[in-house]
Length: 187
Length: 153
Picture (cartoon, each protein chain N blue to C red):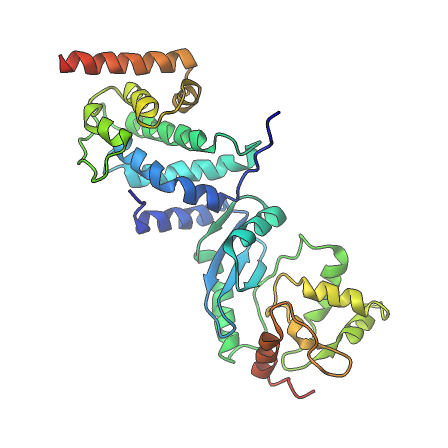
């Protein structure tokens, strides 16, 4: 005997409505493939490309707490804003992000990164200089590579010193697609 | 030495046990009450999840909560002596065989008999499921069985 779908969904909704979850997550389709989007009470804490659910659950649980549950309601705003972004109707995200689980240096880098405007790019060295650590370009690269909330925190807008795309944790094709969408490829 | 068993993320715990707990609650609480009882069971599990110390006995823990929920639900209602009769399932695991047999036992005896002979839980787990001592769990199961025997002869 399996649980009826309505009962299953009703439980998931109530769990979120009664604030019993450490993390809620859901899957959504996008032009860059399926995404896993996860959020705590504070905000979006994870966006994953090509998500492997088992590994993601473990990762979310160890970063935010064991009460991880798939449920759609808390992810409605992030999904809507992502849809609008991919349709070219949104240039800035309004949704809050939760970066509390990250080391201080990475939080600093990601906060600065959020100031790089839609459609523009900066370099690793440029970003390092802006946080007052001009020699830390490599460390900045590492912090971006582990960005838990790509797209919303736009690590795709950071390129190599010669303007080439260099690396992207989600794959260079996606970086190119995101920059193309924003019209920022020609820099 | 026993290895520490990690507690899985709640989603995995829920996916693993939701179907059998639903089936169990349908027998214990009846068709009309099963959906509420199911939600209440896993909401209680969520509330209790942060205080788990290890991942052993999670199945028995889930049955513990489900049984308490079913008993609480019955207490809330007016004293109707028998649990509702349920249709037989297509595939018939042990607990399904016990389904129609135990239908009108008192709730605690029914739970003890179903948990012991249908789900093969040991008396320590049944005791925690019923919120009683191990002796009381054994007692409930054996008086349930005696009552069934009397009825059959």
